[in-house]
Structure formats: structure tokens, C-alpha cells
Image 1 (tube, each protein chain N blue to C red):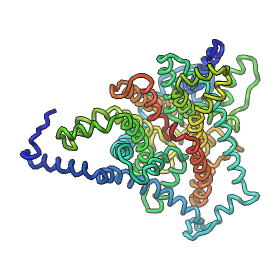
Image 2: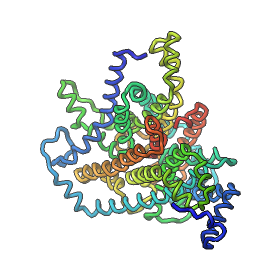
Image 3: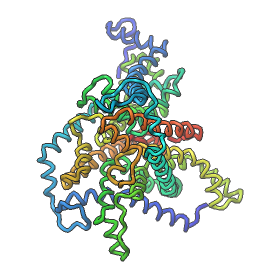
Image 4: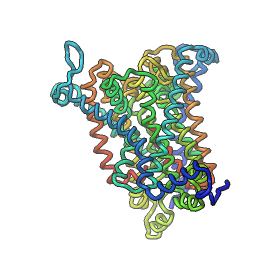
Length: 281
Length: 306
């Protein structure tokens, strides 16, 4: 149904849109090597000095450590709670099931600022002072949803009779989990965990409201951009944050694709779409 | 793995207990469902829904202008102020809504041809590459991508340099509403591409053949077969572009100018000034709009397309 000229114009359009998506990201990488303190274009002289400046900055190191800690803890919580919720929703029919699955998507569908100010006013209300844990709670709310989406998509594609067969053969709950469920779920869990980590690592909207004096890496970037300070170091940190978030996502993509459990072909992309398309920002 | 068939009668007591527990959970699936559901749902209700509840309640409180403390007395003053004539808040809300609508429309226009190309024309290999090319920017830090645009749009940035090279005059885009629309379209674009792609990919080839057999030309098929079937995907994408724009405060703060006050950064400013009650009341506006939008989207089948 599509003629040659239509095909070509669609291809050109697609290429242009992809370029639009990638040029700013490439520029971040280029600016990291800018010698000047001024963010002008074109860049006239180059240096890798800012990389070592960022590496030796105690602010950057502290922020990096906090970001990693928060992301790891939030991912752990998300894996535990997200998997449980997914198992309940995918395997059982009960009253209010639709409502529960609707509720669980809310942290992604509602604007992040709502989550942020809701948590911050709740913290003030119960007298919780900002700490690493207030940040973790904020991140966990949407990380849970990412894991939940991944696992629920996988469970819908696997047969419940596998579990029945395992129990008929005399396996107890742990054995069924270890030898039947785990092989089915492992890649979905790994992918979900990687995505949750990436999401938490660069989260800024909610974190602004839930962190006190502590700075995560995105907060460090945000504060400095707002004040126009240390921009050369910010460029390096920005590039670093992009790399650290993109690697887990690319890995998650691979893991999902290489699994033998999902039908190969179109379905792997579809499952990836279902599971990965909706991070909260 | 070795499963000892006789274990039920003769095995060690721990294993017997485990098997008995498994059996009980099997006979009583409701117990299992409850056990699986209570921890995540309980945490979710307490932390998330509870926090939203506190936010809602505090929107009826007021701030004491002398002591700057929150007074826990019920009143509609915050809401009255929002809707009062001569106050900027209604204008801010309308501006935010208008920008969100424009961004959603532009993103749908940009995304649809790309999604169509990915889903129906590209080879499997190209499709996988394009998919990753759309997916990675979606995940690459949103703050960093906004920051990149700050440098691109700046007076001595890439855009003006490029315009100068081809002999066109400078565009003073930095700190304008146009700049904000561009950046919003940019950051949310992948959210629009992926659901449309998923919806288009599900259309069976036979539908398109049938349409052609019945004599429909290309555009006619697009209008009467492809668009209606892609609609849930477009609506699903619009949930993100619309709702994320509605609640954003970073883009107006970093990209917008003096006339770019948004709901998001107004709320943010009130939080910074410690006037939480008014911030909460003003935040109820995007909350209500997104709530209504989600209900409509659900009717249009967008949730199946997510």
C-alpha cells in the first residue's frame, strides 16, 4: 500500500526525528571536553582537564556515593515489593484487582512534582527529617512500578500450569520458586532491577523535595546549573550520569532479548515496550 | 534437581513443614494472594496514597502571615485566591494547559511517521536499532537533556551559529515560551513514539490488505483503518506528554523566561517560601486535570495500549 516516494519520505522523517533526539545528547559529550568556562559554540580549544577536576571534587564524590546508595536500596525494595504485587495481580482474580493495578501505575502517570510535594508535606506532618531514607522512599514509589510492569508482563506470557506441574511432582514452595519460577522470571527481574536503578540514579523532580542538605548527583547538577556555577565540571558529571543510566538500560534490553522464554521476533520488542516504556521522570 | 517422592511421609521435619505450608497455600489461594499483596499494597497505600491524602488535606490549611507557621484550620481561602480575579494563578494555569496541549499535538505529529516507519516498513534489524535509538534518550537523564538545550538555545549556542553559517539572522529563542515548547517536545517525544509503535505493530497485515482490496488508496487506509487502530497508542502517549508537561517545573525554571510561569514552578516557589498549603492547593489543579484525562483515556482504550 505504500509507494516508493512515501517510503522514502517516511524514512527521511524518521532519520530527522532520530537526529533531533540524539544531537543534544552528543553535544553533552562534546561539551565535556570544552576548555573554556563559557558554554559557547563553536568550541575552540579542547581539554580533558575537567574530568580530573570532577574526579577530585569531594562534592561530586559525595553526591556520587549517595546516588549509588539510594539507587541500590530503592532497587532492592522495588524488586521485593514489585515482584510480590505482580504475582498477586497476574495470578489471582479478586475484588478490586482492577483498582489495584490502576493505583500502581499512578506514580508514573501523575506529574512527579505531586509525588514530591505530597511526600515532603507528609514528612513534615509526621516530623520526619530529610535523610537518605526520605530520598529512598520517594524513589521506591516509582521503582516498584517499573519492576511490577516488567514482572507482570512476563507472568502474563508464561503458563500458570508450570507451577501446578511442579507441585504435582512434589516440590515445595521454595523448590517451585527456585527451579520453576526463577528461570522464567530471572531475566524480567534483572531487567526490571537495571531499569529501576537507572531511574533512581538520575531522578531529580521528586528528590528536590525529599532531600535535605544531602546532594545526589542530579541535585548537584541542578543546583549548579541554576546558579550558573562550575559549569565545566557539570558538563563532565552530566556526561557521566547519561552513561551510567544508559548502560543499565541497554543491558536490560539485551537481557530481555536474549531470553529463550519469550517468543523470539516481534514479541520481544513488544514485551520490552510494555515493560520499559514508562519511567517516571 | 532431585525431588524425593517419599519426603511427604518420611522426610525431615523442616521439609515436611514446608510441604504442608505449600499445600495449605495451594488449597487456600486467597491466603497466598493476601500474603503477596499485603506488603506491597500496604506500603504503597501508606506511603503514596497517604502522602497524597496529607497533601489534599493541607490544601485547606492556611499560613499565618505573621509567624509563617501553618494553621490547621479548615478554609477554602487558598482555592478562592487561585480563582480570584486579578491574581496571576488562573493565567498561569491556562498557560500551562495550552503549552501541554501544543506539546502533545506536536509530539504526536513528530512521532506518528517514525512509529509507522518502525512498525510497518523497517526491516527487523533496522527496527531493533531504531527502537534502541528511541528508548535510550527516553532514559538518558531528563535534567541533562534540558541542560543540553540551555546551551543549544543560548545566544552564542549551536542554533544561532548554524543560522549564521547559512546566512540567516539570529533567533533570540533563549528564555522564551517557544524555547519551552521545543524543549518539552524534545524531552517527552520518546514517550509518544513507543506506545504508537506498539499500537501500529499490532495491526494485522490482513487489515491493510483488505482495505486495499476494497479500493482504498494509501491515505484513505491511513485515515479509516490505521488511525482508529492507532488511537489508543496516541492517547497512551499523550498521557505522558500532557501530564508530564503539566507538572514540570525544571524546564520553566531553566529554559523559560519572565513570562513563562508554570503551575509546576509556581508550586515549587511556594514550597521554597514554605507556604505548603497554597502550593498544595495549586497542585490540585494538575492533579484534577490529569485525573479527568486518565478517566477519558481509559475509555478510549489507552490503558490496554500502555
